[in-house]
Image (cartoon, rainbow, N blue to C red; front, side, top):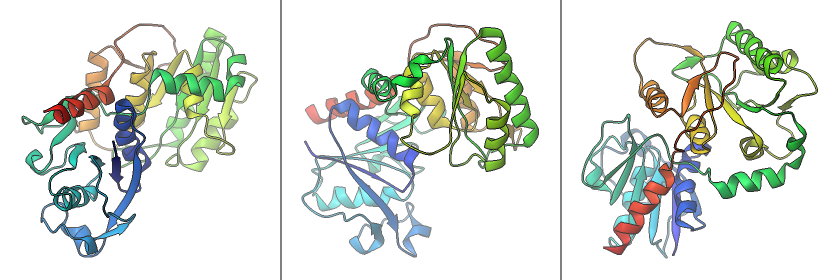
Length: 314
């Protein structure tokens, strides 16, 4: 079975779609697309599905059996493929499309988004690639991390976003809490920053937490992200990233949220997702202390994959 993942050039968005494809047991063809002017201002609210509207990877026959799309600019592309395939391609959209879900065969939205309908699948958070197989591969690819003390805490640092700032003061607070974790548990830290982490913030954390039981990935060499997740006893994630919070809560390992500086007191959809994860006992606030607890891991990608299989069988 042929499956295309169609997204903008956003790794987190793409991984949500790839996670569903992997849950189906299908290796997807990745299609990264954009929209030409003036269509990028008009999509998705005006239907104009035509080949000249798109930039990026070619969208040409033979058409796929399944399309999994996400991101505003991918909506027109998904509808275009549906039209060109004469309706034979099953089109699945991940996230809230902000238009009627009837434009797609299936839509998957997280619990905190308002869109509902007969063809809408409601997930707890966001689908992702985390699976037992991927975590085991991460352990095999980075065997050196097994030499770090237990409890081992993977620390996933995000950065500045529309909803959050990352102040120097906050960086010092986080460093102090992580130091407290090391001192009280005798454990270890596996830390990675992201492309959104301000360089001076990453440097503050790296310098403050230097030691034999701390590994700070500096961006060189292979990305150890899945190795971190595989080896860690628990995972700490900054509050700015829905994708990283979802991935962490899919492991079944204790997940701690490290608060960043919210730009507004309004309850955003991301805050609603955080509250849902706390209610599910998958997430607790990090203050430097450590405890183990059990919860039911998220299975959002598998939930969407099951719905696709059911739809194909109809």
